[in-house]
Amino acid sequence: MDFTLTDEQKMIQKTVRDFVNKELKPLEQEVLKNEREGRPGISKEKVKELREKAKAIGFWGINTPEEYGGADLGPIMSVLIAMELGRTYVPFNFGGSADNILYLCNEEQKEKYLIPTINGERRSCFALTEPGAGSDARSIQMQAIKDGDHWVLNGEKVFITNGNEADFAMVFAVTDKEKGANGGVTCFLVDREMGWKSEYIYTMGEWGPATLVFDNVRVPEENILGELGQGFNLGMQWIGQGRYMIPAGAIGAAERLLQMAIDYSKTRVTFGKPIAERQAIQWMIADSAVEIEAAKWIVFKAAWMAENGMDARHQSSMAKLNGAIMANEVVDRVLQIHGGMGYTKELPIERWYRELRLYRIFEGTDEIQRRTIARNLLKGHAKVGELL
Image (cartoon, rainbow, N blue to C red):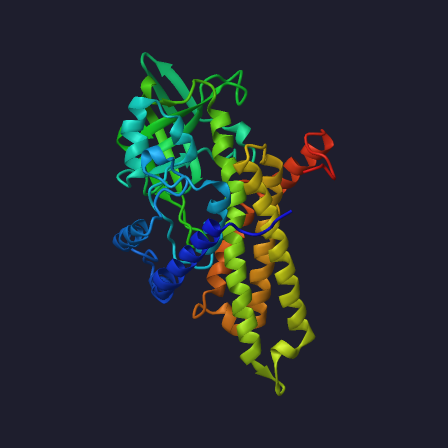
């Protein structure tokens, strides 16, 4: 078994790390200041400028097929890149990409939605969660009623990432009550100009999701994504990718935080000695290092399985559960090591503390991951000690 990265992987990893160090980290204090004063951490103009710089060195459309001008690097490289971007809290991601399920657009839809999204001309959001259907996505209630060659949507979606900024949404609605999630949910491509409205949701972190309100919004039949009644499967396909990408970013953040704790413990002196010499601090550092390393290889295995066409759902659930809990444990220890300074807004630790807490909730809570993992084992879909 060889754990060595290929020369190409090492080169890409180094290039992204250099980009983070040279282009993103210098913006961190500005981001903190802007957020403290109620402004977005980074302007749209600055994001566009950074994306153009990244594009110039080949980072555009990381998972986008080459036929659309992307690099199509695959899950393993995407995980490596997410880990590197996770080392900073500057809200940035490389451009040239689109939601994985948008590639199922038909030719007309590709011209209207997919290609403009890849080019950065349009922005999408994924609208599945409802007030009564979060982790239990099968319980969505939004109705889509057929009326001639249109479908009329009524209902509400909540906690929708990019919902305030998007100009179109991938909306999941019930088109057959009797079938429900088993063939009765359909995904619609719904332009904002068709009539839906968004309302900002204030959270403890900098993540600003939206409530989307649909009041007799008419959507033409041609805007169905994929097949009628097969939307729930599309939703699970979208979510599945996030379950190994989210913990990848958490690993990058945890590594940066741990290094901050190591550096600080060497210079902070109490009772005549650096706190790095105190066993309590050493154990916090040791436990964090072990947990980060374990999380890293669980995530890499999930990405490896996905890249090799294997069913990575069980492994991805374990990666999401383990990675989210790990990051929260690490940031809590790092804040504790920094004491009062860690609790202030002068350092980014408290910001990471708030941001990483979300990782245990969105795209499948800890509890839903445990349910999934246990169910897979109890029903025999996955086996303890299964051969690789």
